[in-house]
Length: 142
Image (cartoon, rainbow, N blue to C red; front, side):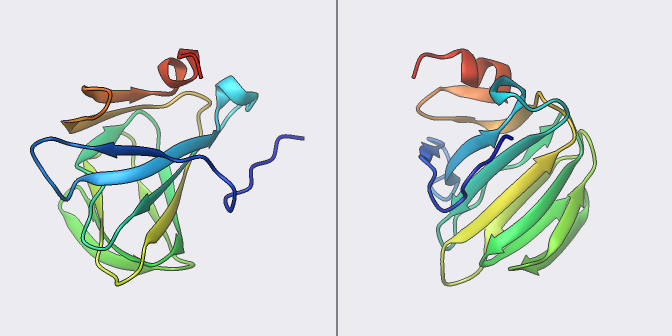
């Protein structure tokens, strides 16, 4: 059985150089490289006022808000979702999440694919890359 504990994850701090509010702490607790056959899970946290950044994903995403309140933009649609609520992001539709609450927002994103490629408008640091590819993430030495 493959398991993950969202209360005990090692999160990677990421940011962009051209937008001080685009920063997150994130990890992939579940992915094909960790043994899943048809799914990937990204978990990330956003401080109040911060946002994930506009990007597309190679697979449909189900966003689950673990804690906090976020404004979600999916294509031309925008709305708020809070703890316990879900939103669907279709494959390759540009989207972003911004923490509009007073506390840290915690989000789990579920994908129906063991591999994920996310392409961001702004390059993430410390990697200096617009692309997050789970196969590359797990190929890097720890």
